[in-house]
Image (spheres, rainbow over the protein chains, first blue to last red):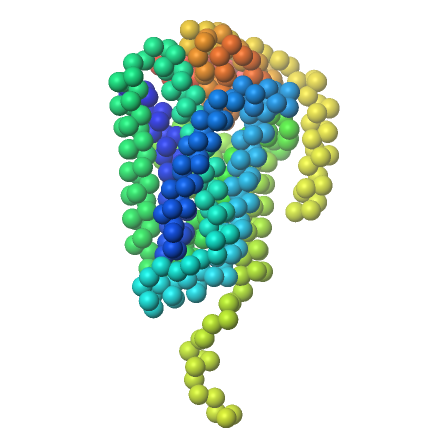
Length: 281
Length: 108
């Protein structure tokens, strides 16, 4: 039971951290709960499908289908997060002001919201499919239903609890800076996901490593430790990254920051100066 | 970004050309254990690890120390490219059977 709980906890934690950042980034948006809930539900269905067709996926592309599939899922999530942060850099300030003034939800662009729904679904799908395969193996290996059920329940509860703790921590950020903070978190998340995608492509020998281990900080924080794993999801931490991973990380972070600056700009809004009486009239 | 995208097919072709020269090493998972438990591979060389799962249950071949993870379905074989690694001992494990599935890559 403990083994089941631990593995489930680690996988659920990874997905929960991503869902939490998305939940924070869509704070104050109407129908947010339905979108996030829908994303989780789609992700769970997707996870079962991916696990069921794991053999087919594995055999694709002469044996590197698993890596290609993971990299594609990760890069799709990166693209959708990118769309959202650039959208938010234009509308985030309006959103925060509106929330401050009327203290209620606003209708956000539904296209941006569905992008984030897809990010939630993809995160749950990727981690969930591992859980499904693992549980299938445990069941086939003779682990009883009671042990599996309680292990699953403890693991899910633990992962979700950490997600909620992070969420309420994020809510303490003042509203004025809130969406800049969640946008920053999304940029780091996207850069980290891109780096993980690069790791899969190097593992499959589809991309060169360009330096297999640029550095080794595992003495400080190993990839396998819980804090290491948490930082891996949140900011893309890797104790032994390859050069290609670093390249993907920096390229995506730079691309999103440039995109936010180019397309963000200042939305038309009244500043205190514009409200001042104009002496020319 | 454009030059990066253009570079990818070229890099892929170069890597594909190299792939034929990569030395191959075999690992077997049986009864949720690795055979051999210690595998010797050359230092500073990219290698191709061929992992076969002979059990009727799925496994996940994983290493935090050489940074790889790949699911190995029941009665099937996967390949994982590793390294080049510096001399040393690198642990790997079966993420789905951590109590029994442990091994070490000895790079020398």
